[in-house]
Image 1 (tube, rainbow over the protein chains, first blue to last red):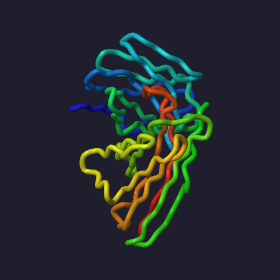
Image 2 (image 1 turned 90 degrees about the vertical axis):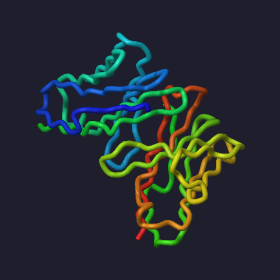
Image 3 (image 1 turned 60 degrees about the vertical axis):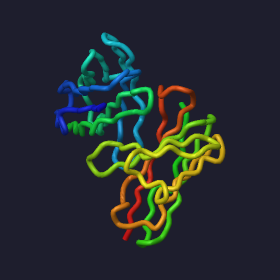
Length: 108
Length: 116
C-alpha cells in the first residue's frame, strides 16, 4: 500500500535556527514527490516537485532534496513568516498520496 | 500562477440540509478536478476525481450518493453534501489540473463546513 510519512509532527524553531523536515515514502511507480505549504484555514500552496533521486530545488530559504526512500525540506535561517504546515505528497500516477504534515512554528 | 477559486470559504448548516461547494479554475481550463477532505491535524484525503463531462470516480469508502460531484464545464466543479450530519463537518478542498499530469496541482482555499 502506498504510504507517505512525515516527521516530526511538529517543530518549534527560534528565528534563524536552521532545520530539516523529513518525508519518507513507499509509493509504487513514483512519478514525482511534491512539497506544499498550508496556512491555517487555507488550501495548500505549491512549493516544489522532485522527480529523481539526487534532485534538489531551492526557493528562498527552502531547499528540497530527494533520495530513493525519502525527501527532505531544509529550511535555512527561518523567519516567523515561515510558520505553517508543510505537506509532502507522492504521485503514484493515479493520485497524490499526502503525508500528515509537519507543523512548523518559528519564534522571533 | 494559476488560480483556483473555492466558494464559500465557510458554511454552517443544520443537520439534514444539503450544502453545495463550488470550485472554479479562473485562468485555465481544468479537465480534471479533485475533491479532498481534511480533518484537524490530519492529511488531505482524496474523496473523488472529477472529469469534465463524465461521472466522478470516488475513492473507496466515500458515498457517492452523499457527496454529489458535478463537473459540467472545464472551469467549474461542484460538490454537494446531501443530508449533512455533524460527522460531515470538515475542511473540504478542491484542486484542479491545468495539464495532463499532476505537476503543479493548484488548490482552492478550502471550505470549512460545520453541521449543527
